[in-house]
Image (cartoon, rainbow, N blue to C red; front, side):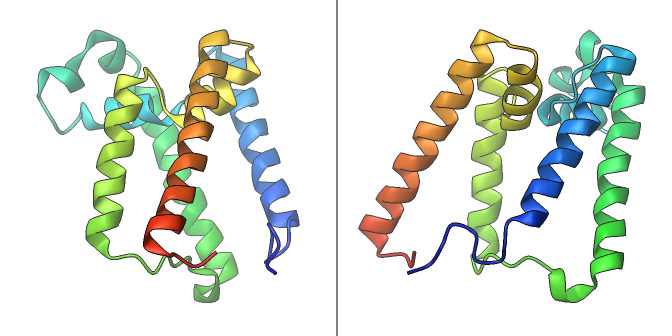
Length: 157
C-alpha cells in the first residue's frame, strides 16, 4: 500500500514554507497579492493587445508582476540546475491532456476571480471568506474528479 508521500515529505514542507514566506513578504512590503492568474494575465498584456489583457488594473500593475513572473521562472531554472535532470517531473500523460487541463484550469481561474494560489495562499492568509469558499470548492471538485477518473478509467493509485 502506497503512502501519501512516497518520496518523503520534507521537500513539500520546504516548498510550502518558501511559497508562504514569498507571498507574505510581497504583501507585507508592498500590500500586493501575488496570485498567479493575475500575474499571468498582466504579463500577457505586453504581447497581446486583446481587450481582456489590456484592462487598466492589469496594465497599471504589470511591471512588478513581470518581475514576479521572472522570479518564478528563474527560481525553477535554479532548482533544476541544482537538482540536475534526475529531478525532472514526469506525468506520463499525453501533451494534449496537459494542454486541455491547463486551458480548463485557466478558464476556471478567470471565472472564479482568481486561481488556486491566489485564493489558497493569499486569500486564506488574509482571512477572505470568498477565498475559503473557493478553496473548498476547488478541493471538493479535485476529490470527486480524482475518484471518478480512478473508478471509471481504472487509473493506478
